[in-house]
Amino acid sequence: MPRDNRTPSPDAPVYTGPERLQKVLAAAGVGSRRACEDLIFRRKVTVNGRVAQLGDKVDPATAVIHVNGERLQADTRLVYLAMNKPRGVVSTMADEKGRTALADFLSNRVEQRVYHVGRLDADSEGLLLLTNDGTLAHRLMHPSYGVQKTYLCEVAGPIPRNLGKRLAAGVELEDGPVSVDAFRVVDSLGRTAQVELSLHEGRKHIVRRLLAEVGHPVSRLVRTAIGPIRLGDLRSGRTRRLTNAEVAALFKAVGD
Image (cartoon, rainbow, N blue to C red; front, top):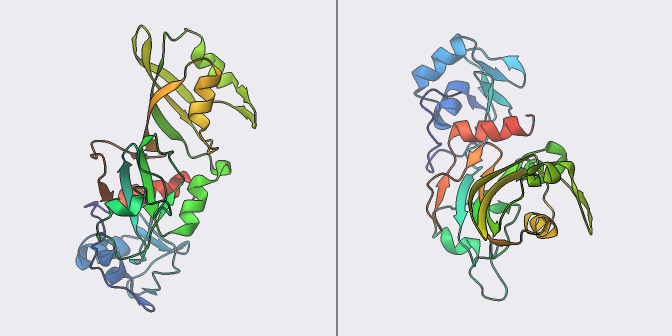
């Protein structure tokens, strides 16, 4: 992947046709043009499955480019953001009822129109991804690609020792069975506990319904990760651009 791990500049050029490959790589944040030429010379760059050569031209809107084996999104029109959605905010870009929505937190930071990848209900908080890359968004949301989402939940305790095994084995809900990919107890304080679980389901209120079904209703829910992207120390209500490495990791998570 790009050695300096920069994000593309918001002022990066918008291409209208083929350009020199090293120029495209540099604009995408891989490094200086000279550094990009060196990567091409050392056969570290492929375009549409073929090892690139110095002098190649590419169309960033259509070319599939890999650097050091990892996918690079070179189309500067595409935007990838992480957001820490606060509790009480609806997961829509705008709300017809006048409730606080996602677009209220972008504050003109992004010129392109972006969309949320999946949802968090209004009472839940944590990581949302925002992008205008419809293909990647679809793959991240579709359960067949198996992209895990991780949640930290405050629930009614105490937690029985066998709860993790029970959740992994599967629990029958009104719209079909669901099982978790991972589960652990983070903290337990008598009548309240914190648990972390991961699953690749995307059905409505799936985590709340699952834990309520096994007798541990959720009082607070925070999504902490979507695939390789983690919430980290991103403050509530803030957004940040994903790095090249993070975008590449998302492509890898969906098999691209």
